Every structure is written in structure tokens, then in C-alpha cells.
Length: 624
Ligand SMILES: [Zn+2]
Image (cartoon, rainbow, N blue to C red):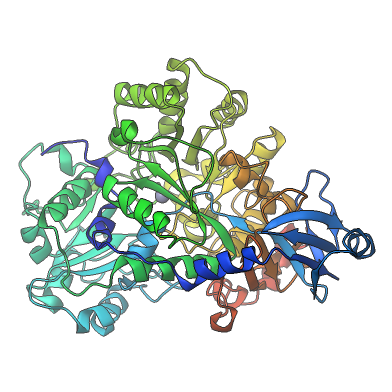
């Protein structure tokens, strides 16, 4: 077994689905071309435009031609300015308009590929809260009903740390050492010889049943001392068998085997349909620029074909796996809504999976009850990392790194130093969840543009307190400290780790309230404007696009999102109730507003009991 399979890690499933050629222009892209050819000036008036410019200024009107903003300001002035030219005047009825949201990090091709997979995330996203509900969701799924002989049943969002997951029917752990979650036996009981893969919510692992393990040549009992399984769960004595949950290197191995199989499912929609559906989904959340990293060469090729055939109507920023560095030219501008901006290197795992690398141990034992557990082994050695970073800088490729624990962050800082610490590379440590205060200062010094992940405060904040202690948990994604240092930083969903919902991201960044209604690090809460900056203008900065995107300003692309409420004018606790009304890419409506459903993570879903109760105890609710 080779160790460094990480290029396969998260994008592997997509490879199978991308291989169908022949993408055609979508109706949306055609419409875009037609309307831009019209050469008319659109004037939006009577609006509440949050421009996101450096003065945080507001405007009521904006003129746009060929998808570019000509002027922003008072309605009277703008109408006067263009009175002798053909114009369409559109009344915004005081609605709030922001620059289109910019996705700091997610797995866009995975989003497309996973359309059709079963969503077994815990509530409030889906219903995967315990063994019964997960098995129920699998059995009732469309995918299950269409399975053919030999097909894999694939689901995503599996989270054994979900607070309602019980220990019952698990793997016979000693008393007091009960392991949450399912084992292969739980799936075998119901699905027999149908191979089942539940992709772990961290995307760094998965639970396989015995049929899937056999098909992917994963041994039930690994050889003694087999390092590959160091981060995976095993049954307790006497069998020493794996439970089916494979993390990190063991998962990579399984993915490598899956790739060798070529096809996991015989019934599969073409990627063309899925790509359109994924763009519409992101647009329905207000995104006009989306992100994908890391991207394998097969997927990159499919993107390039899609772009050539004008099948993209949102901007897609893609990052290659580091071993593909020499394959591409790196650029800051788009061709047909697509650009390859750099590479992404995966350094460690996830804190909720106990595979984020720390300099100080977790407060709980690791896999197999390992004491003084610091997260296992890095996915890339320091030497390899140094080489990747140095080579990327030489090729003018932006470097993204997946880092969660402070020890992984340190590896990236060391690699940057070893490469001569060049300025303004906008190196982007993705997640940076447990960066230390000193390391944050180094980010500022080196011109790094970190992308944080405040959604963790909600989904796993309580768990981080337990696993890492209050002090480290409170400094999770320390965006307020970053703002004080003047960092340009984004905040992301990491979909499909959490839903691609910028309104929810904004809510978590200004409230930092956990599922158990604890505030996780009150000093790190952002103001609403800071939270919005991380989703708009700083997103543009991260992609070297600050001169063309991220603000409603003369000369910028007219990417816009219209909201049901002004997030700065309502109590911050209520931000989760804002809905997206429309999304425009270069002034073209790109989301089918007639099909919009209320956002899943609305306030009622996120905080099922009255959040007002919480407000009596914390000051989170009063701030705007
Ligand atoms: Zn990710």
C-alpha cells in the first residue's frame, strides 16, 4: 500500500461521474450571452445597497451595463447621469442588495457528484441522528430502490459524534468506553451483501460494511503494526477487527481501491445534469463564485470541457492536487467562468475525527484508547510540504493547505519560511481552526489569507470543549483576533461537511452559539459587517479579484444577491431567518426564484427551543 494517496482523497468519487463527455451550453449561459448583447443600461433604484466598499457605505441606486457596474449612489444622480441613454429602470422596493457571495472553500464537484447520494447528516440538516434513522434513510432512498447487482449504496454526512447517537448495538466496548456510532455489523444485518459506504462528515473517512470492505480489499484484521490503520476504529478484544470506520490514510487506501474498480454504481446521471443542478443550488444560496479544492486531473479536465462548452454560469475557482502542479498554467482571471488558481495540500485531518494535529494532546483518548493523543500522523511529511510550497511559489500557483490543528499550521508556516517567505502569495490555510495567537500574527506578517470555519462552533463546538478543553475551543476560528490584525480572511462551509449556506455562516460568525446553546468564544464573535466582508470583499481578495469583484462599486462585475432582510438592521440572533430572494451573476438572474425553498438552517431548525431564553444569559443577542 502506498502512503501518499491524498490526491485521491475527496474528489475521487467525482472522477467516475465526470467521464461522460459532451456537455452542452445551458439555457442559463445562453441567456447570459443574449442579454449581454443587448447593450442596455439597467438602473436599480429605491434599494438598500450594502456596497461593502472600504467606507461601509450604503447606496440606493446602481447603473449596470454589460454586466459591469457603471455607477453607484443616489437615485436622482444616477438617473440624471444616464438620462440620454436607453435604460431599464428596476424598483428594488427597499430590498437589501449585497455583492454576490464568494465561496471561501467548499468541494463544488463533490456537491455535484453527491446529488443523488443519500444525505444522512444529523438534524437539523437531515435525519441521521442514530442507527435506526440512518438505516431508515438508506432504505427509503431513491438510490436504494434503483440499485443493481454489484452497485454500492453511498451516503454522505455520517457523523458518529452527533449528540443523539447512542452506543447501543455498537461494537461491544468495555463498560464506560462505549463507542458511539455504527459498525459494519449494523449495516450487514440490514443490507447483507450490498456494499455500503457512508462518507464521514469530515470527508476524511468513511464507514464501510463488510461487503464494501471485501470489494475494496480492506482487510478485516490488519497486520499487526500496520500504520495505515492508525487512525481507524477497531473492535475491542478479542478480535482486534476493524469496525468499518476508516479514517485518513486507511480511507485513502479504500478510495484508491474504489478508483481501480472504475464504477461504483451502474445507475448514474451524467455529470452535465449534476453540474447544472449544483450551480443552481449554490446560486439559490446567493453564491456567484464557487470553490473546488483539491481537484484531480480527471475532474479538472471535465471542468475545462464544461467551460469550453459554456456550461458554467457561476465562476468556478479550482485548485489542483500538488502532484499535478506542472500540468497547468495558473491565473487570476477566468475563461468562460473557470480558472485554475493554484494547488491544495492536505496536511492533517479533522478535530471532530480526532485527526487534527496538535502540539498538545487532546483531553480524550485517541483511537484504541491511545493516551496523550495528538492526532496521529500528518498526511504529508514536512519535506514533501516544503517542496510542494517552494515549487508552487515558483510556478506562481496559489497555495491552499488543509490545516486544523496548531501542529499542522506550524508545518505550513515552516514550509513558507523554508521557501523564502515571499510576500503577497495569499497563501490560504483552509480551516485554520486551532491556529494559535502567535501563529495568527505570522499569518498577518506573511500576507496569508486564511479561510476559517465558524460553523464548527454550532455543529461541533460542544464536542471541541470536551475533546480539547474550553480554552482551545474558545479560540476556534479566531476571526475577531484576525480582524484586529488586519487579516483578509474568508469563512466557509466546506460543503458537504456543512451546507453551502452563507447566511448560516454569517449567523455562526456573529453568534458562535453551539447546539447546546453555549457561546463558544464570545471574544471571537464578529460584527455583522465583518462577517459579511468574509463572504464578499475578502473572498475577492483571497482570489486576487479585489479589483473586479466583492463590492458594489464602479468598474466591478455586477454579481449581486438580494436578501429578505438587512442583516445589520435586525438582532443578530435572527440572522438565521434571512432568506435569499434572488441571485444575479453579472446582472443576470441565475437562480430560479420560483423554486426557492426556505433555507434548511433557519432559526427554528437551528434553535428549536426559544433562543430568547439564551439571550437572558448572554449578550450575544443584543449586538448588531
Ligand atoms: Zn474541504
